[in-house]
Image (cartoon, rainbow, N blue to C red):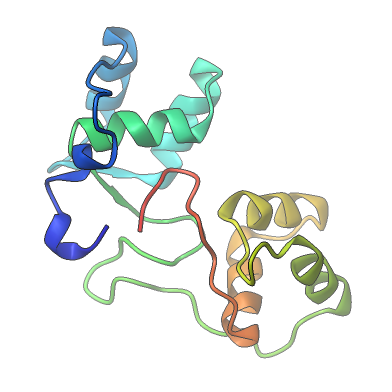
Length: 144
């Protein structure tokens, strides 16, 4: 969805209008100014034992914006994106990224898995992708 679609995120899920009441309350407790930070969404998913995608659908149905992407790709003010290209990329990181590509892109979930596997900050993986000119998509929460 584009910036023009802001506030119409629910349209991504036609016919899917119900959110579990308890999940909705958990989400709304973390929302500030109609925004929720990616780490807060992740925390809810872990606590509830649900996939980030389920949280993402609920956020879309509630028309809540996602901020503070843990890969630094979106949701920061005023520059939107904070990740910068890496000056150097370790060979094992480059290989892990290349091995996980899907359609020439690195899925967000794969970026997180690589970071965990190599014991690196998530932003280090996205910085490597910036240098390699690899897009990270799709977002686990369904953003962009």
